[in-house]
Length: 362
Image (cartoon, rainbow, N blue to C red; front, side, top):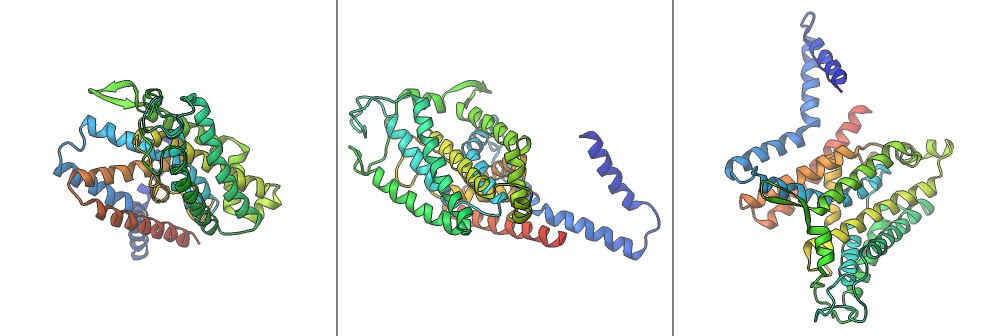
């Protein structure tokens, strides 16, 4: 790492050696300008963070920092899933609804015995590993469904996942009205579930770090390994870069696409399982717009819609930056409704910068 930094520094300093011709000055200014434009989103966010920290002294205190880390961990798995779809030059609009469905299913199967609002009173509390497996199967099944239609029928992921979003939402509406629930919020969760997700094994500066932070760290490490150290990961990036070249090279386009979307669905279901206990009151609006946060975080983190470009560390940084901004805006009293405007602006600006980089390279 130090050698790479040293090489970049030496390369930068070489710009200042030799005679300063007009062309050379213009080339250097253009290079600096491109660098500023390519990193403008990070620069603006950093400025916003500094302003928020100045206005509210609590923003960078240990309790607030741990809250930001916890929020990042909660949203990170769904971003890791969406990122794979973007690497394939696609997206996934069904992510939020899959999160909502798996959250409600998980919560309904892990409600406390004897609760007057128990959705399925005829069954006890199902073991947590079995509920996790059920959630994973639900998410992976919908993901594989998306991948099959994208690869088999050459449909754009936007259209396929939009259709799946509506299908999943309908199933969610039906599910929350089943049993004894009658459309009410699913709450009164068993302590084993809430302790598993929101409990803590480590406290820093008097603030507990919830267990789902460690779950997010494990998933991040797993996704890094899959993306960088497996044949599947290499095939995914090859397919995103050039589908025809990947096919000629022996990549099974159908299987790889299905696996990418199925893995994404599994990540959504983990988010749903976490949210079921983290929110503790689940309804048909659970998971709403989670895909927008995930897409924004991925684009901010350098996962390109051009395809075949993306890094796990960039996704983590993107999710963290978004959480910093939105939590900070709340702390300085910015209206909740305006935050959606800011979120939309970030997505548009990030996509514009991403396309600019692509056009410059061409």
